[in-house]
Amino acid sequence: MSPGASEPFDIAVIGGDGIGPEVVASAVEVVDAALGAGRCRWRHLSWGADHWLAHGAMMPADGLAELAGADAILLGAVGDPRVPDHVTLHGLLLPIRRRFDQFLCVRPVVLHPGVRSPLWKLEQVSVDLVVYRENTEGEYADVGGRLYQGTEAEVAIQGNVFTRRGCRRIIDAAFRAARTRRKKVSSITKSNAQAYGMVLWDEVFRETARDYPDVATESLLVDAAAMDLVRRPEAFDVIVASNLFGDILSDLAAAVVGGLGLAPSANIDPTRRGPSMFEPVHGSAPDIAEQGVANPIAAVLAAAMMLDHLDRGAAARAVRSAVDRVLSQGTVRTPDLGGTARTTDVTRALIAELA
Ligand code: NAD
Ligand code: IPM
Ligand code: MN
Image (cartoon, rainbow, N blue to C red; front, side):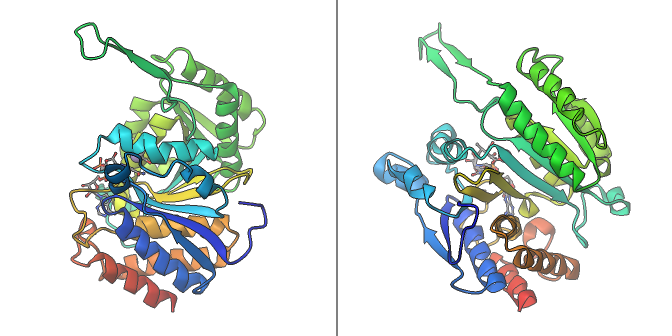
């Protein structure tokens, strides 16, 4: 997106697989209600597992070029039981994150009013943390290979790539975010066992911290951090972690505050050279697909992050407070939150709050 993207915004919409199209349809309706119909031009792209089954690819060969001109990308989820996961993900989601250098993956974790945490004691405290996940390298760098495939001598090598620049830019973004929040950054690695890449990460973390003397820091090992997310989630402010650890910890943190149905995610290139991408943290949930019961709030909150990115802060705040009101009232809830509402009931309740 160019720095001054103008209306109507050109939004590429990839519903994807499973519940992806269902929750994204809700997000599109809510954004139209919050911002005004016609102010986003929704470019629907039917890419995903069906495209793979029909054409042998998750998206057309020029798919990335087609996305390049968009002001933002709104994604549901990809993944389908009929196609191996490494094929679906390496054919669509991961190439988009890398091609558009969306190195900054932002995943807020908030205990919303009226939502019961499975850890009920947490209702006495407030949880408001954000995971800054490195999104372009680390354990997800597509580097490696397989030798003697299918034989007893088979070898698979999976490379991890940690660069000084890659560590620096995500850690620096985390410190800048902390300055606008409660001024604490927790860096999470496993440098006792991963003695090269994660030791480099720890060194860059210590160096970067010197530029932010007003921000408190801690460096945790990932196993201990997982325990602390359950034991004292209220103590975290900004968590900065590698690609894989950020992935795992964001599902864990989401579960602590009520589940994946509420957890949004933004994949951001802060230079705005290309489009950033907004999606729920959750996947395509094949177990509940096509039943009309998926919770759309994660996708709706991801769309609110998109509105912030497009400099439409008022509409983003309106969407968030509509979500908080619907959650606080507690009457319209999908089954993951203990209710009986359907996806479209939640969409309608949100739109009614916006009206
Ligand atoms: P998942 O996130 O799809 O589902 C995990 C559990 O949470 C399931 O029980 C599901 O029913 C529930 N759940 C998830 N979202 C929900 C919602 N909005 N409302 C109510 N319940 C919800 O994870 P999974 O089952 O491990 O993966 C399924 C597929 O999705 C796999 O192919 C995986 O690779 C893919 N995946 C894709 C993305 C993505 O596109 N960003 C993210 C995660 C997983
Ligand atoms: C996510 C997902 C993806 C990831 C998978 C589907 C590759 O789990 O966005 O959290 O690990 O990045
Ligand atoms: Mn994940």
